[in-house]
Length: 188
Image (cartoon, rainbow, N blue to C red; front, top):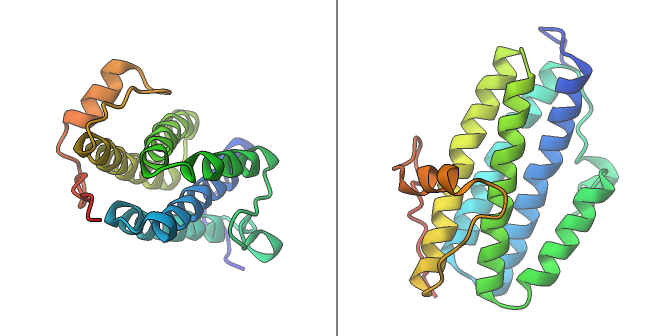
């Protein structure tokens, strides 16, 4: 076990535990949708979510926090947080209906993730946590753009569910701050 390099608050600890599980929801859902529909956007973003989990795990390790997605919670669709497990199951049910429904669920999830991450950033005083969460916010913006772009190629305009229209428009119209930039286009 790593020796914590900084003290963190209980709020920071809870946020990291929740965020690790939220990243796993995304990874598990996108992997399942990739297996079902075989389109690049799900494959590319599920790989990205794996990297996000590694970043959050590094923080968990640095602060001596047990990984909430290991052991009996390592299996796809299994979560310590019952609410996240219900959300995952609901997403799978909806995503299984059609590729369009899967893309809408994905966009909705990325919106929720952005909202949650921003709230976590505002509540922490820890710069290492803040830096990692800001990186995840940028990545989630890229993912949101990719899902919205894939919906648009199918003639569907996505309406934001969790973000204000103004915040959503700002994310969609930006070019992205990291690789990806929403260019995971439909290929099946």
